[in-house]
Length: 101
Image 1 (cartoon, helix red, strand yellow):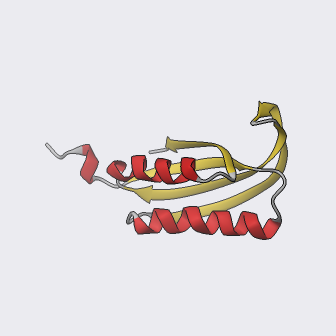
Image 2: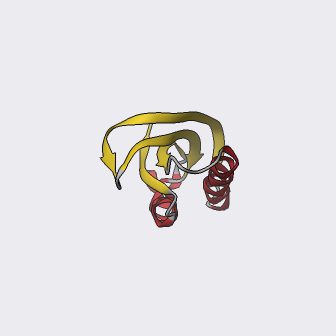
């Protein structure tokens, strides 16, 4: 039997950033998250910047946020480190990593 932690899986991360940052700062944020995925031996499949959207409810006193989706392949054992990196970034106000296959 093969351990599931040694098989690469497909994931996506959706994160919401502070609505007050510039487009250039959003690009830099995407670069930081993408580099962390690459540093953890992951592979980026697709990056999609959805832009500024109204939130369903306030998060950290913000009513809007910049949404970004990144699809990637990575080992399941690397997800916790990626999550720590994303959560430590003060510009990101909410994030969710989901396994998609």
